[in-house]
Length: 365
Image 1 (cartoon, rainbow, N blue to C red):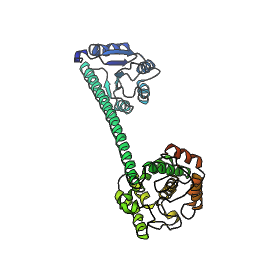
Image 2 (image 1 turned 90 degrees about the vertical axis):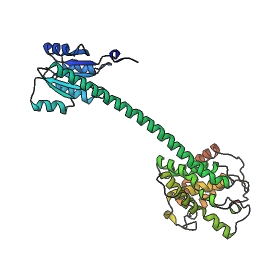
Image 3 (image 1 turned 120 degrees about the horizontal axis):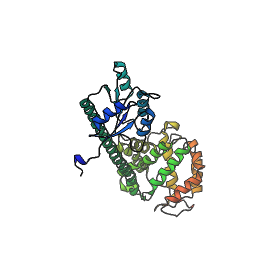
Image 4 (image 1 turned 180 degrees about the horizontal axis):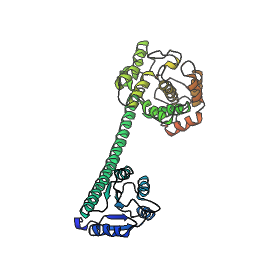
């Protein structure tokens, strides 16, 4: 580690067109700092914009062609030089002159004739302040980067917890967990083509896997029953919507609140015959209508121990026929027209290639 005496000297740029003034300031500073000299404003700008800019500038006000105020104005407008402390050194001692210099961004204003001890004290102070400011800015940058990294990691963890939470119910219902992946992608695809933005579609995709979370609360003898359900048993199945909504509850997370809304409304039907609220038409939240189509499509086109898979053609035909009764007619029409993109998702996340038109039983939807 370098000792204090081994630290590189700070560089001070003296800008003055009068050589006598330059000699005075140089004599004060040269034993303490590395001194550079510019005898006019344009040369000062060139030195300041060089690859090795000065650490501090002592700037005369009255110079030909470009005065000190013009030089300071240019320096403070440029990102490369705005943080270099500028100290005016001038024989103009009116309050208005000093105020103008400070308003332009100068750190200080010294009057001629100068006193060596004052010059040294002011230069030392402003160099130290600038070092502290830079150190603080660097620390803020480092802390901000650390915070953003931790925030990203937390967000990724939270999203993974949400996905796994959605899969938990599917494993109880003879699913593999890929159902929630596919249906959430179907829902996002439909959302984007129906007018939602990419961020809105992404939120929907993250929230959709929680649609059947309430099945965690359905008894196994009803949820896994291989045969037809009685009316009483189906009434119990229907409670999974409210259960999912209540399990998630009201949260600060926008995605969790969206998941709760989807859990509650994804079994509502356009004609009011759905459950649990028997909502009609656009009274059903858009997110619930979008997920309903993606959920039904994947449920029917996927083989399970208790049923064979429907063909994509037959399933899209059923969705088209259900437009205006089960499904939002506008969304159903859009979805049917997305067969190529739907097949891409289905093939990418397929776990079982079995698919035929021998319909034995429906997933309980």
